[in-house]
Amino acid sequence: AMVATRASDERGTAQQVDVALVGAGFAGLYLLHRLRKAGFSTVGLEEAGDVGGTWYWNRYPGARCDIQTIDYSYTFDPELEAAWTWSEKYATQPEILRYLGFVADRYDLRRDIRFKTKVTEARWDEASERWLITTDNGAPVSCRHYIMATGCLSAPKPPEIDGVKDFKGDVYFTGRWPHDGVDLAGKRVAVIGTGSSAIQSIPLIAEQAAHLTVFQRTPNFALPAHNGPAPSDRMSLLQGDRAAYREQARQSMAGVPYPQQTVVSWQLSDAERRERFERAWAAGDLVHILTQLWADQAVDVDGNKVVQDLIREKIRAAVRDPETAAALTPHDHPFGAKRPCLDTNYYATYNRPNVTLVNLRQEPIKAITASGISTNGRSFEVDVIVFATGFDAMTGAIRAVHPITGRGGRSLSDVWAQGPQTYLGLTVEGFPNFFVITGPGSPSVLSNMAVSIEQHADWVVDRLAALREAGFTTIEPTETAQAGWGRHMADCSMLTLHRLANTWYTGANVPGKVQGLMPYTGGVGPYRSICDEVVSRGMLGFRLT
Ligand code: FAD
Image (cartoon, rainbow, N blue to C red):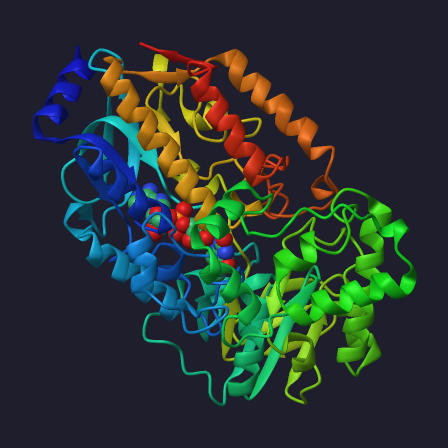
């Protein structure tokens, strides 16, 4: 009785909408636009002070996209495309943030978003078939459908090192960089981590700092971005036939319009392989080098090793000190199995006299002290520590809303205790009318996310409209369908090399996190076909009531 009273009290004061949507990044903005156009009353709930998501939070020096910006854009409205021109091949964070602000203005999205409002809890009420969403700011929300567009890389990982609180200097996280910037001139700076954010920021921090010490646990493969204007060959493909170009991206493996390669590495001579590699290296494009060299690169260890060796040669050539070069060279994972990085002067930065690399594989960090960082053997006095230590990827932001309580009082964290399980990466059995965008089980971070986000949002909004049309009030995947998707995921992952790396794709970067490859490796185009087939076969795998 107590519970019932509480629930009805909350309903009395709650904001009533058809759909509550968490997140105002690339995904949340497009969803809000589509839901509104489909006639659903919607509220967006966003922890940040404005729109942008990833591009609101990640303001560290050098922050950019690493999918060419002409591809990393919305494609749903040709007039929007005509109204915006990117200034660079890889736009900076401020430019991408301006773009998302421009989109929010153009479709008047901000009026339905509650900013500085963090969702803390969500509860499915079986009697009313509605979700009740609790926030840390203002009224709860009662909604028919609950969509989490909370981001794959939005929950920064807390530091795992003792003593951070004792440190007397300044501490920054790349994923929560101050809006006014940070003056590092003349400072002794430590950067912990060598993932993508570190690789983008290290060259710029090195230019400012008196001294920069980089603490590296695992080296990554990084490729030169060769940033500049958008390449003319890509631009002319886009401008030649925009609709066809966009459609090719939607049907491609990675969400970028490149053709499928059919030649395999052993059909090519050494000279031919090197020539293809040099062309890819000069192109400065991750998707090009990941998909256009030879067909066996992503699926066969031998075909992959050829690329690895060629990149290792480049690292040796770029870094003067052989010991530093060796430490920067990855040996523990196939190229592409871990997210490769795109850089501007990253390796050459280690030739500067004011930059030191500390290889944590040889001398792990013991503690952070009042004045700096001590390893097994040395201590480094610094004024500033920058944590570029990454994210609790894919499930971090979802699980941070706790509890999410579904049918029968089951909580999502209990259901996912052995790892996330979804149907299509979009829905979860036992959680009716609940959707996650680019969730575990979808192509997500293995794709150009702009393309994946539009596909997800279109699919979800079209389904909600069809349900409403047909007079259904709930949608939920069956246990069988979800188990089947899990098996299909596992089968697909046996075909690529992703399972051979310990990475944030698998949860390996977060202590205690259940290990398993989270994104769907079957490709963006095939994934889209499956989602479409589910619909054309009468919502195969879903229970509608
Ligand atoms: P996000 O942009 O992460 O937005 C999620 C929002 O949800 C955030 O604003 C967050 O504050 C909010 N939120 C989360 N939890 C809650 C809660 N409980 N309550 C309220 N609000 C909440 N992808 C690419 O395809 N190409 C790239 O080049 C690329 N570059 C990247 C560079 C960086 C530095 C990073 C970090 C990521 C990059 N990504 C890239 C991935 C990027 O995250 C996606 O492309 C895209 O921006 C994700 O959009 P989203 O709306 O799904 O999530």
